[in-house]
Length: 443
Ligand code: PFF
Image (tube, rainbow, N blue to C red):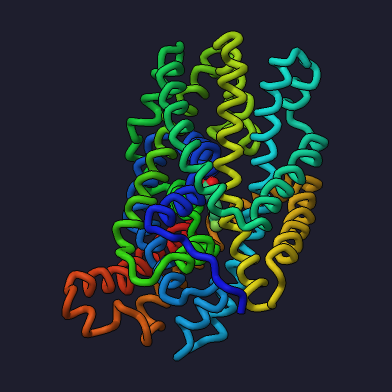
């Protein structure tokens, strides 16, 4: 078997996992979902679901990978070895499909980020026509930028320069944070922003039980924390065994939720500023244009800043492209690690093979955008990821015995609180998750 790569420190793991978690889901997905689901009510439910379900699922996923020190297909097979190894491996393979589904639409949106970053730069260079094309939404732009993004990701992964990208993201992510805060300061002074702020921060409690809202919040939380496709499992497997997972999971969750919250604080008020200025933003309570609207709103915001707006815009979208890259890497790592460890492919071959499949999938989405784009996102986030998480809870709580610390009497005698944590994962989490599905089925 190929020699396994690993993270050299806990902080290295937290940064890589936070790099995977923080991405387009936070800055594009979260505000879009919040805007489509009543703002404050969505935020409220999102925070509850993150705390009660998504963080425990993140723990379960990392825990399974960390104990197995193997790719997700083998790790789940091993955890299920006593009762149903084939089912475990099958679930791992479903995760691989999920990771590819994620990549198929994610690389399209990441391509939008890249083209917007270049749009600002070309405007600065006086190439106004090119800049306008780069900022406008077109199939041709998708056909050019999606492959560019896929190739960029593949170049990094095949070299295995995890450290490079980790260092990059740990340096650049703080800049993204500062930029978000400055932009929030700017937008909140504009006319119309206070209406958006109210919409975002004051929940309409009559909406919080709406099945569509609850399932969207759950899907968003799972997507944002990168759970349910094996991305966190493979990262967990690259960390030394038996670290204090609870604290690590909380740090990842806190960083990810902070960035999503701040993105909402920027974009929801920005939508209302645009609405106040006469731009059409909502149609029948939903945002116009399958989530692309924020790419029109943000440039309008940057334009209103004058010349400096071009620099801010380029920097902002460049940082988002990097955030997207670190997320893409962890997803790509799922099928790549499987091909390397189980099919004995070289890392380079595996990377290019996976990239080629993703390219075909994403180009299919581009070709049938109106039908497929939203469908694949909803299928992944509201069905596949939650079902995978349900499976992780069942594995950790019910199936996995040998090697499971949460079932080991000697360990539980030393750390009795672990027993209650085990009960929570075993009984409460599956019931909560099933309740959400039941509610949705009834609606
Ligand atoms: N968590 C990433 C985001 O919020 O953009 C998306 C993601 C990355 C999902 C990696 C799944 C994954 F395996």
